[in-house]
View: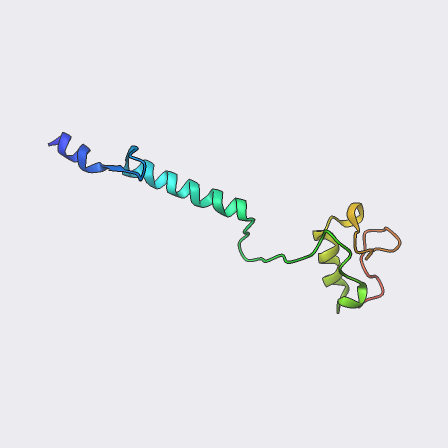
Length: 97
C-alpha cells in the first residue's frame, strides 16, 4: 500500500526528472520569484523614470514632491543627471510649491 502511494506522489517534469509533488511546487514557486526579481517588478509601484539622460526640468513638475521623487529615484545628489538640484543641497526644484 505504501509503495502505491509513493508512486502516485511522484510526478515527472518535462525533462523526465522525477520529483515529488511538494518539491515540484517548491521549484515552481522559486522560478516564479526569480522571474519577478529579474523583471524588476515591485508590488504596487511602477517606475518609468528616465535616469540615463537629461530628460526633465523643474518646469516638467507641478510640485516639489514630484521633482524630489524623480531626483531621488535617479540617484540624488550623486547622480543629478537632470540638474534638478542647482545648489547641491539634496532638495530638488526648490522654487516649486
